[in-house]
View 1 (tube, helix red, strand yellow):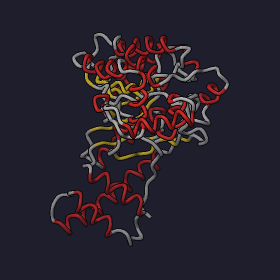
View 2 (cartoon, rainbow, N blue to C red):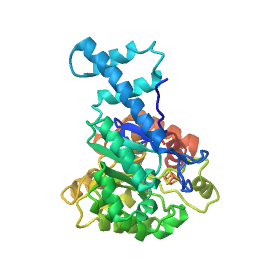
View 3 (spheres, rainbow, N blue to C red):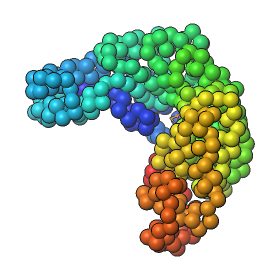
Length: 380
Ligand code: SF4
């Protein structure tokens, strides 16, 4: 049976990328806010096993491609690929789920590859180079190869190693900075310091790769809110990453952070307080050219997005608009955003229906803030 293995998650920006599993789960697995791999054992996959997966993907793509040509005589457009994958339903040689997955990637042009799971750079550099070369030979259409990586892991790679990875095709890395504050990093057991964050980020950029740094508004709780915003801005300003991606903190039941909250040692921020934190961070990002993206449903304000420095005012505008609303309008917007009635702050118009939902939530949970805290984990 021709098949390959994939892992559970990838960044939203890699929704159409081929997924190649390099390791299983997370070797650190201690971040207090993270629910993803807590009950799964870490392992590194053998290079030969990963290369077999690449060969399996290529074999499936080849078979689908030949069926597409036989049927349509043209290059793979979406409907031809879907027809081809349907025709494989009774093919005993090929795993059906893998064939469907491959067809999806073919429909999106086989242009990008994402290395799973949490920290692929933990592999020895020469092993990763061998895998990258094999993948690019199998799929010459690939122009972007990306991976999650821990800052700590990158800080252990030399600039020469990072350049070798870049030369082998790895051209974008996603680092979960989360916070630039040493106090917050220690609180959430991130296992990295501010200095290591800065050094690893600068080394990735110097190697010629694109870099996404993730910032988590609210991670320091009310206790460390100011420091979290200011110190995170310090790291981001020092690194000048290609992308700054906002991921608002949501305490998920079952995580150490959630327990800390129930023990009243960490106070979650309200939606409004998280927005204020984003503002504090944004206004300190001087002299950099990063593109800010609010590309996750956990964020309240989707329209805080643009490229610095030119778009700073445009990004502050929805924040200030939200903060200057009457508090009842703010609450109605928050509720409306979470039930899908509004996308942007500029969409807001008072709505009787949303107001009724707001009242119902207040009656059930005691306040909108409390209700949002209960509801948001289901978005993660
Ligand atoms: S390194 Fe990433 S995947 Fe691992 S525990 Fe931390 S946040 Fe979760």
